[in-house]
Length: 289
Image (cartoon, rainbow, N blue to C red; front, side):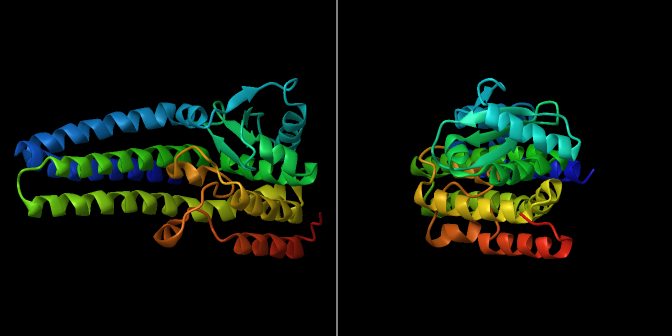
């Protein structure tokens, strides 16, 4: 129920933001606030539909993730299957992302369409215990039905950013004076920030929860902690060269690097805090490894 309410809130936020953009663009370019608002509201409804049913396919396509069989990726398949047996969960599809940036994500609308994707760099960097910790984290997202919410949020955030850029380009052709151009500039700046805040609201606490649940699944919090430290350093050295920062919240660690104001909108909790929480969990439970 909570996930459904959050999803509806995201859809409502998209429609509201798009209506604001349509109101501004319609008034500036066509002197018709109502038509612009209606057009952008309809566009938001279409994006909501596509996000719900196809966002996971869009994410897979954007990162060139390829679904593989057990014969094609026996190590990845076996580790995921091991986690599923421990968690009493059905086996998801598995995919490999062709990049040396070490990372992983889960996507899909539900358990039937769930996909766990690992990059080539992840498989080459981690030991089996560490890889199991990362994949358990992703399976925890699937168990808690996070992947639909996070995938839809990533798609919606990307759409909002595109609409804001449309608003900015619209201001370039406006003949209605500097006042409207300034208003449009404000929209172009604040709407992407709103999209980032939407992602922030759903991402940070869920990462802590997935860390904890994944560590408990495999009963090795320290293995996941070691993996996270390796991934943090690996992504700092080799950030993703393609893809949209709007989808950063899908990954177990942030695959992109920002500076200045962008650090305020980081989608993941501080790595030191995540590692400390896992170390505390190891002390509380007596789990080792």
